[in-house]
Image (tube, rainbow, N blue to C red):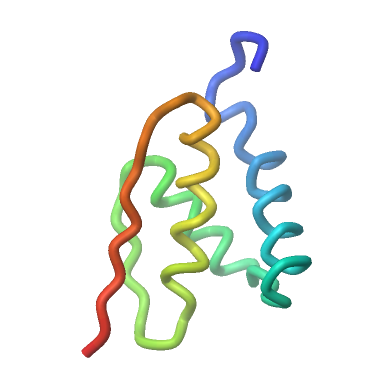
Length: 79
């Protein structure tokens, strides 16, 4: 990673996840989902309604921080 910070790699990491989701799942992150991922990567909360792709959004910062060896847990629940 060459001493770069997560903020410096955010765009490229998110692009990798977006492409992987498209190839593996046939799902494409919408722009608003990328914004939600950015909020989560900054340690903020992102409120989303049912069916807006919360799990897909969570993959973005999870991958970014996995690059740095920082673990994360993605927990989803249904009503």
